[in-house]
View 1 (cartoon, rainbow, N blue to C red):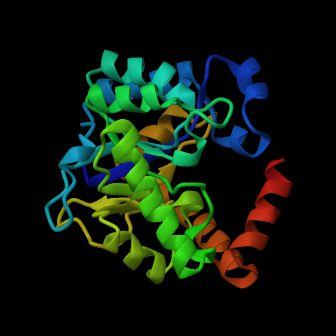
View 2: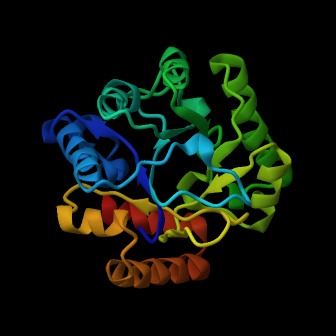
View 3: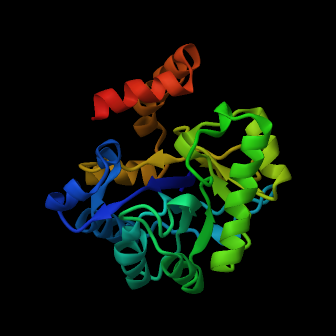
Length: 261
């Protein structure tokens, strides 16, 4: 193993017919439970370690392998992902958008969020309302960061010290405010892996988004942090980042929704 690969998932569905229950702009990230289960089997068969997210410490040497993360807090995280992970004795991190809990159709209840934590999964934050943090003023940014952390403590009994940025959008100001709010380990959605040859960086950590239809060969190449498998996705990510820099976060997201819709 060359490093630590952080895999980013979102919603799971029972089958492709259930995609109708997923918001259109989120469907490109929704895997069937069978696909997710098969990927966990591949990791087990290939003897690729699945790292417990609670062991991540800024400044410490990361364990080579993969780390599994879920964004948003879709109900399928508790209903489908949790039992599949437990069947394999694997841990994952679930980053919760707190304003969605018990308020938005198809998302976790607070009981389900608590259950994730009680069953040994890491529960972290994904903002309060899922607004892009790089677009907010200081008061709004503080409300998003502290609001999410306070709700997770009050409603789920979780002291959230890890978070992922909604939409992967952040700037230096958002990063600094997140650390001021008590978050120690931060995740974005920039494509990449983490070298195991040096200490975990203090910067926002990269992840690889797992989409439906990914081949077994490509999935294992990502999991093994294969440099050759990373070349084209890195170029694609660079092109997207360049476009986002030119047009801004909001306009970029409008373009994204148009083509994904």
